Length: 237
Image 1: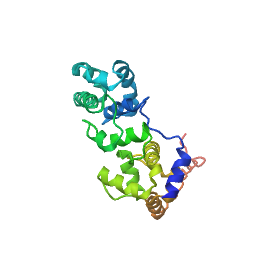
Image 2 (image 1 turned 30 degrees about the horizontal axis):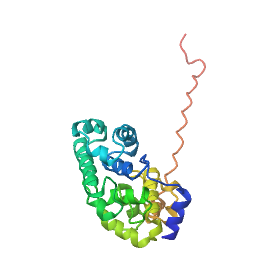
Image 3 (image 1 turned 180 degrees about the horizontal axis):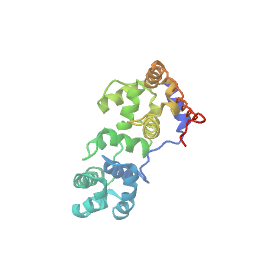
Image 4 (image 1 turned 45 degrees about the vertical axis):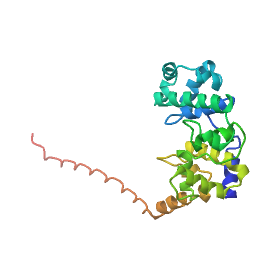
């Protein structure tokens, strides 16, 4: 595992979550909105949202209909607006308007599951409590042979056993970037993959290519036959 973490660190030394944020509150809101969406799109929505609702207390007093309009582009906007309101109100009621800093308290907030909590704790609070497991980490970890599980919680448990705790946040963010840029879902780029030397999936692909018969060289097209010249005196007068 040290080779995998070393290769990832060399190629993604400054890996971080790609959701724009300035604090734990903003990252929590952005991560909730990012479900079934893209970080790039969310980053176009959150500036206006944070200007209007700069903290949990302000968000807790928002009108749901107005909030739905602001987050409409993110998809599933009614459910997301509802989760944001309930999350903010829970922070006000239970935590004095602050974002809690434990896994248990975060996961008790409406709309927050373990992946979201790991993003906030690791990327906004600097706490290596767990490893972020999204669709990219799920795919890359399986291809690397790091897990045979499909459930995100079980995948996380496998990864936590393999890597030192002080690397947990970085491992998650680096695997996410690698999944987005190289180890994509439909067409993984094994040729340019930094992890190919230690990846069993890449090795199987190389073996399959090696077993393919070499393409037969195409025979050159036949030369056109020269037209016979007419004999002298054969033409009629």
